[in-house]
Amino acid sequence: MITVGRYAPSPTGAMHLGNLRTALLAWLHSRSQSGRHLLRFEDLDTGRVRDWAYQVIRDDLHWLGLDWDEEVRQSERLELYAAALSRLETYPCTCTRREIAESAGAPHGPEAVYPGTCRDHHDPARPAARRWIVPDQTVCVQDGYTGQMLCQHLPSEVGDVVLRRSDGASAYHLAVVVDDAQMGVTDVLRGADLWTATPRQVALQRALAYPTPRYWHVPLMTNYMGERLAKRNGAPSVRELRGGGKDAAELRAELARSLGWEVGQKVALDELLRAYRQSVLG
Ligand code: GLU
Image (cartoon, rainbow, N blue to C red; front, side, top):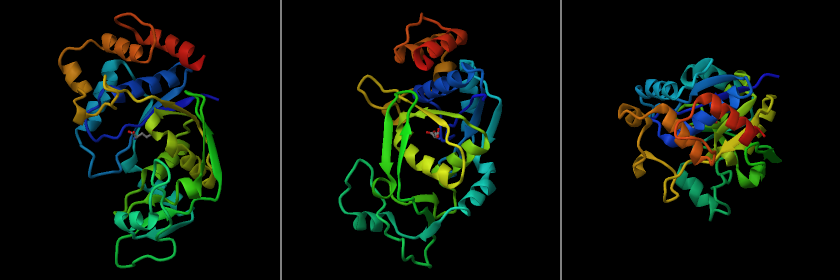
């Protein structure tokens, strides 16, 4: 079966090097296996989307030498998400964050678990989100990049998942699962920040009778203080770097070295395809 991979940026601003490194790895993953590679703009959060960011992201990717076979925008696929939502067992939830926090008590793990506050009652006068009743199951996922296995008991470690927000927007977990299935994605390579969201996405795939792709969660790039790169802690944007005359082959080499790969001062994509096959695919 042919590999189909994707890079799925949120067009909420300029890309930094961490975003670009994940984009590079996703491209290397698809292309090193002669697979198809797709670009999907995750633009459902209309309050945060910036119209200029779509083209800046395309330009950043092209500048590094990356390409893709197809491009989609989540904002143009709302009917698909609505159709999937109607196939799932959900209930209206009108609780505020505060109400949920008050009924949850102290969190047990790193992530707050929704305690089921609105399962049996909601306030018809308030705009309602829709929550999916998670199955009483433990879902395990294995990661291709780290080899790690993660198991989560959905009711006690995740809780009922919001699939439509109270402003009517489809929530990320539903959109990503519908899109990956509809676009025929076989391999999801993305940032490690989404690793703990994977079991609930796999549970959604099962509930919707979709196949489960293989997962590759890659480390997030950090600065010298070990902090995740972000605009607020001074990470330069890729647009600024290329505007300042940075050489793409040199930046590719820097990104590769930040992953511990041994490359020269400048590196071509062909060489990185070989390095990826050797060091990641084995
Ligand atoms: N849009 C998400 C992000 O920018 C990525 C989602 C995914 O790859 O599943 O972090």
